[in-house]
Amino acid sequence: MHQEEEISQEEKIKRSYYDLVGQWNIPIVHTGGLKATDELLKMCRANEKSNLLDVGCGTGFTACQIAKKYNCRVVGIDISETMVARATERARKENLTKVEFQVADVTQLPFEDQSFDVVIMESFLNILGKADIVKKALDEISRVTKPGGRVGANELSTDESTPPELLERIRELLKNAMGPGQGLAQYTPTEFKKFFEDAGLHVTQMVKKPPMSVAKDTIKVMGLIGFTRFSIRAIYDIITNPELREGTRRAAPAKAIMERRKDTKKFFGYVLIVAQKPE
Image 1: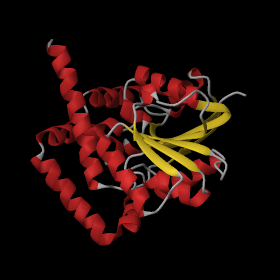
Image 2 (image 1 turned 90 degrees about the vertical axis):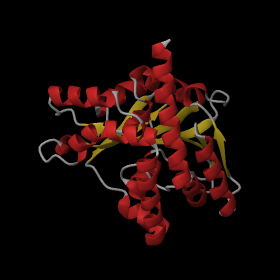
Image 3 (image 1 turned 120 degrees about the vertical axis):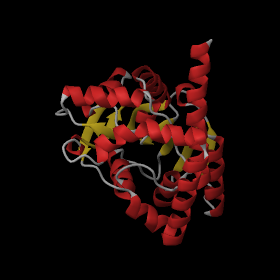
Image 4 (image 1 turned 135 degrees about the horizontal axis):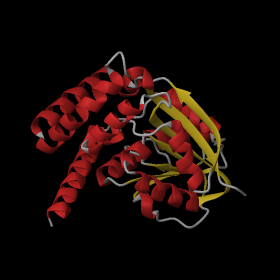
C-alpha cells in the first residue's frame, strides 16, 4: 500500500509539472532549439505529402511550424490536457487547418497500424525514464509507423566515454528526480540505438551534438517581454508550489554535474537519431 501511494505521488508531481509548463506556454524546451528541429526533419525526409506525428508535442510550437513549412498533415499528442489545450489554441490563432492535437499516452496510441510516414520526438524519451517504458513507447511508435517510414528523436545523452562511476552516479540521482529532472540525460547514443532496433526500427543516422542552450531561440520566438514574464512566473511557481519545488530540488545535483561542473559537463550533449521501419 505504501509503495502504491509513493508511485501515485511521483506521478502527481510529474503531471503537476507538465501542467505548469503548459500554463507557461513555452514554445521551445528541447536542446538544440530551432536548428535541431530543422535538421531532424530533414533527416526524416519530411515533405508536403507526409502524414506526421509529433509525440510529446507540448504547447504545439514545433507541430505548427511543421504544418506551415511543409504544408503537410500533422498530429500532435501529449499526456497533459493543459499542453494540448495550449497547442490547439496556438493552431487556431495561426489558422492552421492541417494540424490537430489530442491527449494520448504514447504506450497506448489511439491510431491504426501504419498510420504515419514520419514520427518525431524532441526531449521525450528521457522523460519516460525507465528502459522498459521507453521500449514500450517505441514498440507503439513502430506499430503506427508505415513500412518505409521514419522515426526521429532529439534527446539529451551521455557520451560513451563517460566514466562508468559518473554514469552510475547520474542514474542514481535521476531515480529520485521528478518534474523537470525527468528530462535529463539518462542514456548513451548506443543505448538509444538499441532501443530503436529492439522495436524493429533500423537506425540510419545518428548525429552527436555538444550541449546547446535554447534561451536565444526562446527569446526570439516569445520576444524579450514575453520571455521575461515567463521567467518571473516560472520562478514564482517553483517557489510557491511545494511539489514543483521538491522536484526541482531533487534534479539539481544531476543538473549541476551535466551543465555546470567543468570536469564533467564535457560528457553530456544531445543526439539526433533517425530510424526507418523496414518495408
